[in-house]
Image 1 (cartoon, rainbow over the protein chains, first blue to last red):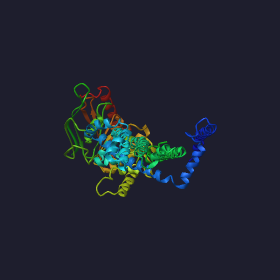
Image 2 (cartoon, chains in turn brown, blue):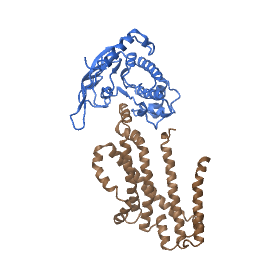
Image 3 (spheres, rainbow over the protein chains, first blue to last red):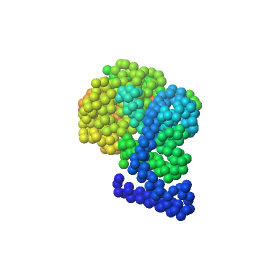
Image 4 (cartoon, helix red, strand yellow):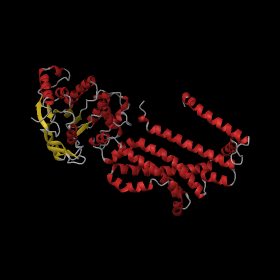
Length: 254
Length: 261
C-alpha cells in the first residue's frame, strides 16, 4: 500500500479508536450494562484466545465454504441466464415474467420453505445462497449484454465470427463490468443468507455460534464471533475488489 | 468484371405510428474487381446503410447483393467492413496485436502463435511495428484507425468496405492515411469501396466516384476520375483534372443538393 493511501486511512481509523475507547470508558463507568455489552478489551481477550487456539478455524471455514460454493453456483447461473436473455429475444420473453416474480422476494424468506424440501443440511443452505446470488447477477448481466456496442458485434460478424465465439470472446468481456457489479452485490447477500440459514438450522458456522452464544448468555463470546464475522465480510469485499481490478485492468485508462 | 453488385436495392425503416420510411430506392451499382470506388453523398443520405447492406451486416428490404457472383445473405468471406468509429470497433481488453489476430484466430488450423505472427506482419505494413503490446486506448486516433486497418488486412479480403474511415482524424493524419491507403491498395490488388462526404478525399483516392442523392437515396451518377496511377495523395491535388473534378462534384453536391438529374 502506498504511503499516501495509509495516510488517508488515518482519520477514519483514529475515529474508530476514539469510539472504542469511549465504549470502554462508558462500560467501566457503568453507563452501559456490562451484562449486555462487555468492554471491548474483554471481547478482545476472548477473540485473541479463539484465534490463538485455532478454535476459530472450523466455524470460519464452514461458513466460507457455504458462501463460496453458493456464490459460485449462483453467479454461474446468473451469468448464463443473463447472457441467454440478453442475446435471444425468445429466451427473454420466456423467462422475464418468472424472473420478475421471483426477483423481489427477499431470499431470506425462502429458507423456511426450502428446509421443508431439502432438510437442514448443506444442500438447503447452498441452494438458498445460490438463489440469493443468482438474481442480482442475472439482472446486471442482462443489462450488460444489451449494452454491448453494436459496432463491436458487427466487427466480429464482418470477420466471420460465429455466435458461440462472439458470446464468449466479445459479449462476455464487454459485459464484465456489469457482471462484476452484480456479483459484488451478491457477495454481500451470500454472506447474509449463509449466516441466516446457519441460525435457522442450528448447525455449524459463524451464524449458528453467534445465536448459540447469545442463548447461552456467553455474551463476550457472542461479540467475539460477531467481530470475526465482520472481518470475514471485510476480507471478502477486499478480495473481490482486488479480483475486479485485475479483471478490468483495461478499463483503467488514466 | 464486377466483384460486387447491387441490383435494385431498397431499404425502408419502420417509422413510429406511420408507414415505413424509404431510405434507399432501387439503387444499382456494380463495383469492378480491383478498383477504388468512392461513394460520395450529403450527410444523412444513407451512405453507411448502403455499405452495411453490401457487407451483409444489414438485409435489404428488396433487391439483391452479389459478391463474386454469389448472393449475399450474411457477411461474405471476401469482404471486410472498416468502421468509422475505429475506437469502438477495437476490443479494449485486448492488446493491439491480439486485436489484429482477432481477424484470423478463429480460422481452422490457426494457432494462437501463428495468428499473432500474422498480426505482427500486418502491423508492420501499416507502420505500427513495436506497438503490438500497447492497448488501443494508449494510441492516438490515427494509430487506432491503422490498427483497425491492419485487422481488416489480416483477414486477406478481396474487398475492403470503408465507412468514412478518415473523417474523425485531423487533416494531417488524414493525408498520411490517404498515402498509406493508396500504397496498400496498389500493393495488394484490393477492391476498395469507400464511403465519404469529403470530395477531395474521394477524387484523390478513387478510380470512380459514385454520387448519391438525398433520401431516398439512389445513384445520381458515376464519374471516372481518369487520374494517373500510381499516384501520390498530395501531389494529385495539384493537377488540373483534380481541380476540375472537385469543382464539378462540389457543384453537384451543393447547388443541386445531390438530387437525381
